[in-house]
Amino acid sequence: MHRSRLSTLLIDTPEAEADASAAFWSEALGATVSSPPDEPQYLTLHGAVPSLDVAVQRVGSAARLHVDIETDDVDAEVARLEALGAVAESSWQGCRTLRAPGGHLLCVIPLHSDPELFASLARTWP
Amino acid sequence: MHRSRLSTLLIDTPEAEADASAAFWSEALGATVSSPPDEPQYLTLHGAVPSLDVAVQRVGSAARLHVDIETDDVDAEVARLEALGAVAESSWQGCRTLRAPGGHLLCVIPLHSDPELFASLARTWP
Image 1 (tube, one colour):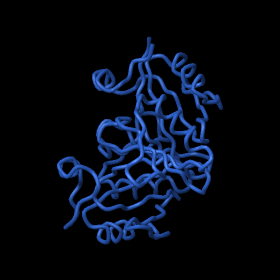
Image 2: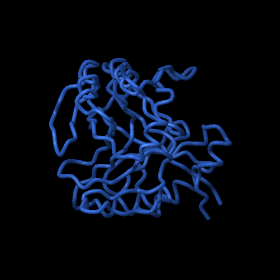
Image 3: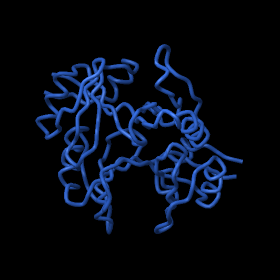
Image 4: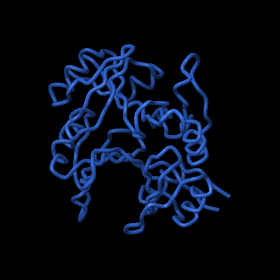
């Protein structure tokens, strides 16, 4: 038995435009911006949406959005999503990137939000 | 003075794969699926994220995600976002599509969520 929830919306932005992107979304959504310690590739937009982390991510690819699903058991969640038709793409620092039916990327990430928030919002899977 | 908030995450999916996409995200997020009356192009994922509408949209383009900002004054919100650097792309049924700095599409849409939810979550702009 494990749990998961849609936890994060990433605004993946080419490196050269990431600061302009974060400045725009910050003003557009009325959110403050800061990077987590030791993770300058993320520009977190605080308070943009309740109970959802929203961040600009500096990437080497074209502009896109993707979502993260956080879970207390990454292997079990990846297996569950693969059984639903998702296909593994890559793995990086404990995060697993999958491609969903329909063509969208998603990442499965270890639990990172407040444990009480996670417990109140996550679904439990057999 | 007007108000706005990030209200919607659209999972834009090529027509031929939209039903498979909705089936996947429904199971992945533990959400039920239905289309609004007279809007079969949307496959709403109920309860996927608190206070955020999430829906698969059947589109003629490649797979992508985009967000909607709902507002009680579309013209004022578009003008505000354009002043922040967004560029108008198109207009359709009262919705205005803009491209944000960094390259992401967003739509500005008329108020559609519960008025009390909107009042509690929207930001007020001068």
